[in-house]
Length: 345
Length: 173
Ligand SMILES: [Zn+2]
Ligand SMILES: [Zn+2]
Image 1: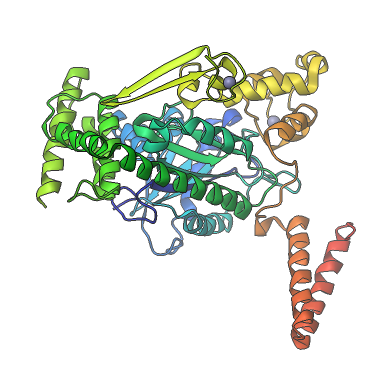
Image 2 (image 1 turned 90 degrees about the horizontal axis):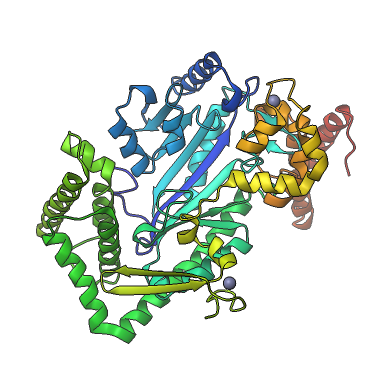
């Protein structure tokens, strides 16, 4: 189980809520300037936090050295939003600590010594913060953080200094995108210190009409202020998206339904599918499921399919190297059979 | 054609997205396009570029002259490398590059003072200050609700905290 298969609030528009904290350990240079011996000591220190008696609400944590991880497994972790691309790029000294429900992950020796995140299904930023705050307290009981009275938690990049907190909500906004209202929405949020990205972080395009909205500012407001600001903005956006969906349904009823049903038709019958087409179809399927036009499927089913169709996950499943043509055929085949299982269940 | 976002400048960037039968067209001016997610991925624009450009604006020519000489004595990070990567090398870097950093922080952050969580073990005066502030708030509520016993308790704790705060050589307002 992970955020992908679990039910969450506002699941018609929200895929996941995530909080990330950046921390560095006092007495060591940041990862940019540290030696390999520093990195090893830091990893030992962080690992120690997880070996004392059941510190994190009884959950079991595993420690993985990135250098021991095959390329395809690294890609899967990134595609499931459990680790960053950046962590994989520091592969010689980096490690990932993860709980057995895949909610809390701690990246060690990434851009900062410690990057911990909590990811939950649906819209639940407050709960994610509550959980991560506790994880942070537990680590803090064992290590001394690099902290400055005026600037707060010190981070390698000044864009994270202060709280070190990045809260982000991954949402599906097909109607705002198609009706061209999204530009105005994104422009408005940038004025209140928020920023939008595509499915896989900075610079990635809004594949499948999925956007990640997060706070840009980390220094000044408190953690709770940052989360409240983002929460209010997100609620507005959900409202707008739902209104736009209803409007589309009202204006182009049958034609609109036809598009959504055709998406299901293609997904259950296509023989070759590239990632762009796949994500577009998944977006339409998600919309059809959310609006109860397409019965027999849940939002969680759609999440599972979306992750299942990502290149790394497919490669891992195939157990062999796939070239582009292979990959697109294998994607169509895998999605077709899983989707048919879901529909028959 | 006018830009769809600002409706002021000529639209020079056009993009058509066709996702099955759903078709959407976007027409923007160059300025608005640069804020746009879809176009941002076409013209790569990173946080580091942003920091670098702010640093030039903030510190100007002087910073440029300093770049050859300023090096963090603790970790060896030099200004040129910081500017290029947007990354600091250690906590001392925040002090050594503070002249260059402050204008950057003012641009990319809302304020330059942290008001959030404070690590308990740091024994930081900030933590004391925060506790004092919270206790004063509690005291106010206790007095207002005529919970006098509780108020007396809080007052004692406040006195102790304020004393240790003064021991650190700081003034309390
Ligand atoms: Zn414009
Ligand atoms: Zn330094």
